[in-house]
Length: 230
Image (tube, rainbow, N blue to C red):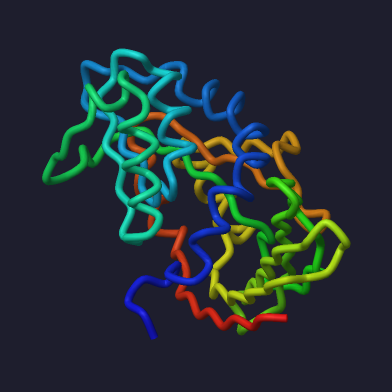
């Protein structure tokens, strides 16, 4: 297995993420409206292909922005996006550590409890004579985790599936009780329907100084991919 968990599915991530970031642009911008560039940089952890990085950079024009992305294939797209935009490229930099009292903004991955989520198509993007389609569903994988199975397809103009890739992601959800405890740390959950998958809303968690203790509750995934060609 490749050390890059997105080595196979990475080509689909950017294409199928634009719709989500169109929905998230306004709430993320609002969450960052009180950011203070004089207190340090904005750090985008798990930046992917940089769609959210540019949202943050434009939301706080005077801030330095650090994008962190371990996947080489996603990082290549991230670098291409940043290089193509003069303003974020001018503001890129690297720091050895974060301020322990930095504000926190987290995009939430549903569901909030281990449960079954029926497979649902979340994006279909036409490109030339083909469409790139993404769907996914979740199933419980234990008392504190779910496995999201994502299915990526390339469909020709006659509706035939030319290629299909399936990727499994092990995710530890943010539990309702954890969200309540986070609220006592001055975090606020924003569930205004910024994006939905299988009937479950994607939202944000954000808060003021001293809220970073909640960051440990977002324990991201392992990733396993297998593909098949039709």
